[in-house]
Image (cartoon, rainbow, N blue to C red; front, top):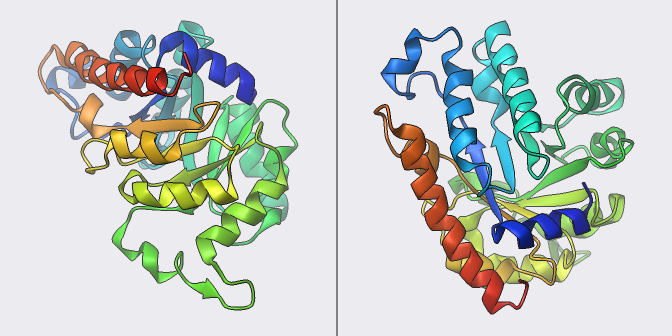
Length: 277
């Protein structure tokens, strides 16, 4: 799926919503624990109720690998179920891998070949060698961490290179955008840094941005759209806990649908105001 295809789906669904499948077995509704695969059953119900509203799903790999082999099985079934349910959804492995050489190549094979994800998040600390094996896969996306919302992001991301007069995150955007194209490189920018999106767009005007932090983490969708939207929308805004854990009773999936619809309807307004529909 390239940028134009992704934009067409955004226009069709009037949405740029990414739903994070951060599925914690300790937080899912108790009645699901009786099933053979509680994690997959939870994901399945969420997907069934929201796939027409979501542009992307983003399983956080840590929640699956922490369960050992059964977690990986749940993850594989989840990805397969999404593929069977809709061809109009991007599936992102939120893995934040960051290595080089054969190790990086094996990570790329893991997520793109073995588990058939469409995209994977990557930590760029080791430079181009981290990302290059992922770029060898046609139709796949590398999503590079650039500016995050966590309190200690300032430890490194705002360090200034005096020789270039650039902050570190600006260098990541500037250099990272040259590693590939706007058809295979995205960047992660936290929603609670919404005003910084204006500056982010100076360095990555055409790339899609994966923006976590809307909802439970306090990010403003209105601000993200105001500062981050471009001529192709250019945004995948993620909400996890605010959707998937909105209810713990047997109607949890229907409640998740309502929460997703609320975000989708707001997104439709911003797309219309930007003359993108």
